[in-house]
Image 1 (cartoon, rainbow, N blue to C red):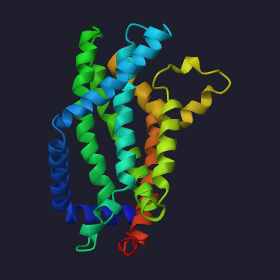
Image 2: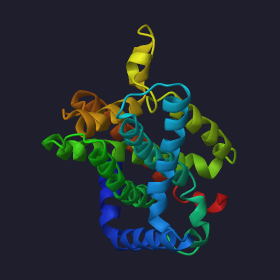
Image 3: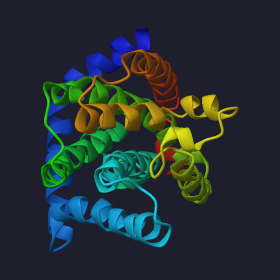
Image 4: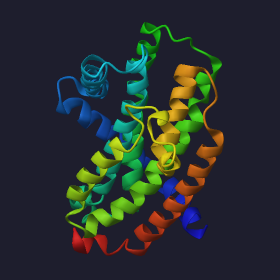
Amino acid sequence: MNILKQAYDDLKKYREFMMYSIKSELKVNLTETYLGYIWWLLDPLMYMLVYILVVSVIFGRGDKNFPVFVFCALLSWKWTSTTITTSTSSIKSRSGLLHQIYIPKFLLPLIKNITNSVYYIFGLSMLLVLIGIYKIPFTLHIFEFVPIFFVQFMFLYGLGTILAHLGVYFRDINNILTFSLRLWFYLSPSLYTLDRIPEKIRFLWWFNPMTTFYTSYRNIFMHGISPLYKELGIWLCVSIILMATGLKFLYKFDKNYTKVI
């Protein structure tokens, strides 16, 4: 708990730096390409079209709402994969700045997570358009988006703090991440429902947080029912443990990072 209090105190102390960094990253990403934020719509949208072609057209599977079913997952997955990748390199990518001034390192993956969260929320506009196109009724359960978003944010930040530390010391971590993320994607129910998994091993999918996130998003956006609060509560506890562990590493090695990067 002392670590969490120290992080909270530092967060208040360096909040102006954090806000400036978030605004800068949003502006840089906007000016790096002609289409800017639109890529956060186009990227999952193009993947969705590919999967529709493969699953619906070639294999003849998927129901009439399959595009919305897939897009719910792809949008959440893009937020996850981008945040994990950028959090891992968040300390190394700021080596020039860190050699000049002191910054608590836990802020760097937090900045990446908040920036990617803004893009994710922007991408939700396309999901709402798709829901309208496929005439899926909007219900008040859509407001239960907030607790799902909060738990996923906490999970990504907890994991990001640990990966930010590992990203400094393990040079091959990017290659491992590329393979791991690809495997994680296909082991998550992005393109299929859980009833496609053999019943004997289906319980294993609940050890994957994306199963809870995807199912919860589909519940509120597609089925008009509440998210999986019990499972979200479990992943919130896991996220707090991950965050406390990551913060412990980042504070313990705080002075050593600049000697390595």
